[in-house]
Length: 280
Length: 271
Image 1: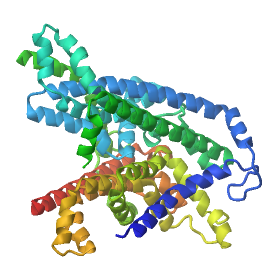
Image 2: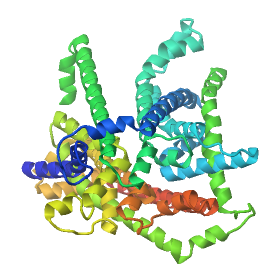
Image 3: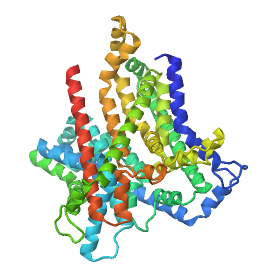
Image 4: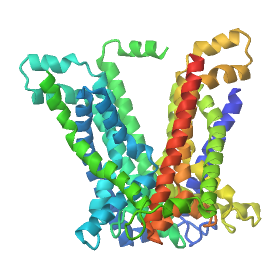
């Protein structure tokens, strides 16, 4: 494929991906109510958005849920990865791993429905009127976040030098000390990327939350409700704000990792040279 | 050492408990509800109903829409991934981030944007000066799937192509392959694993979606996901919903098994 051709193709795909988003951003500043006729610039829809209490409430709910579910999933998942890596029986290990991956492989709707059935059953058993709400959504989010945490921590454990914890034990560390002083720092990048992934997945989830809640509203559920009626540009304003936040976070994280990379290169003697060799 | 490692695997205990409670038990409930009627007594009627034309047509439609969407994604993504893999590392990184970025926007928003563009009095018709009905067609549903899941196809293919040893391409070139033949004979077979994971990553969400078909199809193109959603949210026929989920799970498992098999066989031929 020639260079121009591949550039044109890339540009076309990017246009396809971004056209709807750019148009959405454009019309969020529309003075009028229409989403296809622009009648002047205004920030009214943004102002109106902040007065909608259900949106603000949902934003708060979504953030609380994402923070809690990602932290719980990271704690359970990291411990699980450590435990799984220590399992000796290959069959047990594979069985545990396969079961862990189920929420990742299953379509979201199946995960959502299966949990909803469980909660419904518990509800009827206990004779409660409703169990659906914050707790059921939290359990559901932790469940679908867990495999992502485990799968990002496990490779780091495998990469770690097995002799390091042994050395720590020989030098008089208790197993717990050796874990916190030697192993944890080595697998920390994996834990962190698992945490971030769990957090973003939780922010974004609609399907699984939708089947496991009644009154507890997250942002995607509120958006779903908005698109059921005639949509006014304030939903576009909300989406634009979400897009802006994501863009900002991505740029920040990229800048940060670039800075770390630079620092690392400066700290390791001949680091730059080494990197070039690898690149070649 | 042995006792130590046993003690260490205890760290997995909370996860094991969690898995039993919230992965295995829910799955058993899907089975239980699939094979019982409303009163809780054992029955095959849900499963039998699935084989009536009402449901079979929905399965066929879901599968064909998902297959078409996956195929279109592959057609768009493969040349793109190939083009990306030949760019400078920095440009490639920036472009991949740009392709990923829309994925961080909720699927509901992305789908709604398209819906708005395609409306009879929407922007596309306004610009063209026409009043074509896009929404409520099968094409619109497929477009929604392609738009939403395209990045899932680009990423795995791009990763695999970037890892291909460049000297293999030079060798093919030296031995007289035309550029097209090099792609077909060298790049394509070596990137098959990426293609296969791309296909599964697009096929699974496509076949299980309900929002895209609801919005883009205007309710006239029910897919498995729509039917499940309706059984749960409107009809509250949990038994039928569970049976449909079971079928969806089986379809996904079969397609994954087929793709893995295909991947392995090809892998052996190359080796």
